Image (cartoon, rainbow, N blue to C red; front, side, top):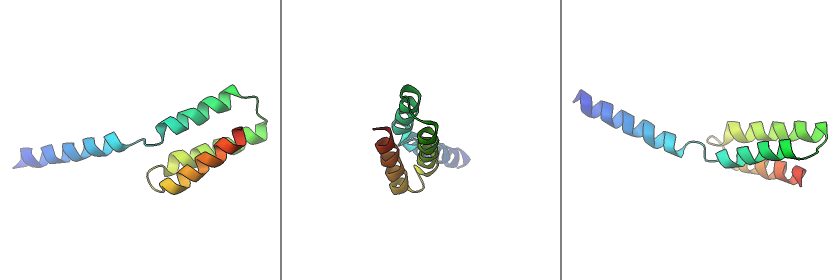
Length: 77
């Protein structure tokens, strides 16, 4: 019985880790654009704040994370 419960716990842990990082590529994209563009310090600071919001809320509040990503991308373009 213990082996069964341990197996179930590992299965759930695996499933949750596979779904983790749903905005990982967007975060990497923001990092790359911050480093590649000649942006002012103020814009870089704002984009960094928005990137942190995306990273912090990608699983808790995906709508806020996506809005923050879109706002950051609009500042870059």
